[in-house]
Image 1: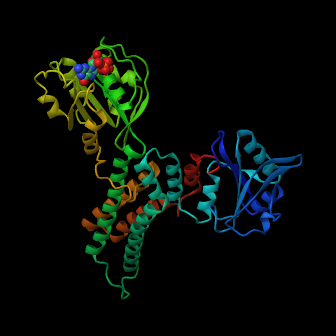
Image 2: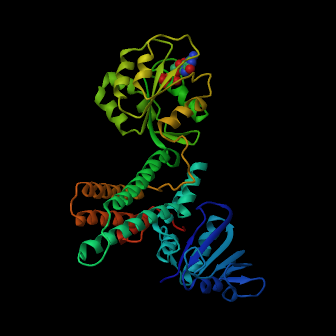
Length: 453
Ligand code: GDP
């Protein structure tokens, strides 16, 4: 296996830069471009040790810094690793990387260090995906969820479900294959219980992932309402600064504003808001179809109404459009005298908040309703949480097979059919953790990684 190298710190100027090498030749290559002040060679040093010195090429000193040595298997990748820390300049790190490549290392591909860690059994696929989640975490809860995936909690949970299914399948197969032997009959009650445990564990994982996504990734959100109800004011209150122009003349917001705003731990991804804000107009001008498409693509709709004036036809069509959606109604301008007739709004929406975007603390006012609506209230991110859509798909597939198995068992179909479904469920779960994932799945996982990780 070749020895790989990459700059592992960000591609930007900073206090420290680091070139990481991994593979059999890692320490030998590092040795050939490093001169320690103590005179000791890196090759003579044990794992987990560091030396201060200078990095050199044929022309002289490149920089000074600290080299850290890890010995296989006690390293991130499970191989010998050298981490060459230098000053964090763009040119100096490039120059040191070029030097180690000239000495025989090859450039690492995206995620190749983590891929080697996976290949060497240092972590499974779900943990590798946890690494990426830690890197991209944008808040406390997201980080907690990612750290707990990285720690292997998802793998552990999936492992438990798998183990119980495998032993149930084995007992079932033995019993079906050797009817004359003295093998105890598999009790269908116990088998049904195993299946139900699996089903409920997978359902919980999927439910928590879906609810947690509005925290870890953000939820695509549409902010809509007829002109002048206060959408821009609301948006500015959420983002904390004047981003779009607030004006008393209806329909003047036409700039494209894309924004992720935070309400408590929830991230609302408000995209293409200029277009979305004119939904009220579009209902009039272009018709209901386009507005419907926009709303259909959203994970959350925030429908804004002006509570100081009576409902209009436009408001009514917005109410109709939101039917069946995960939608929050905001009755805005509650600092002004109230108009009548908003009970219809309260009835039509699963959640409704009355506020003044002008005078209230908008995030605080929206938070409880959003948390309840999105199922994010009381989510425990120290519990196992799936890291991404791939893991969710694997769980969905396993779940669907387990439901089929349970149904087959209930209707008294042959145990063979039950066993086939259990096998398929196990297969999907082993793909999730990577124990039985094909090359393609592994490639897919690491494709999104950054170089140097
Ligand atoms: P948009 O067209 O829906 O984006 O509406 P804007 O945010 O531009 O607001 C239209 C007008 O309503 C502006 O004059 C705002 O200052 C005013 N406005 C917005 N929210 C409130 C509110 O809660 N109370 C009061 N009194 N005025 C508001």
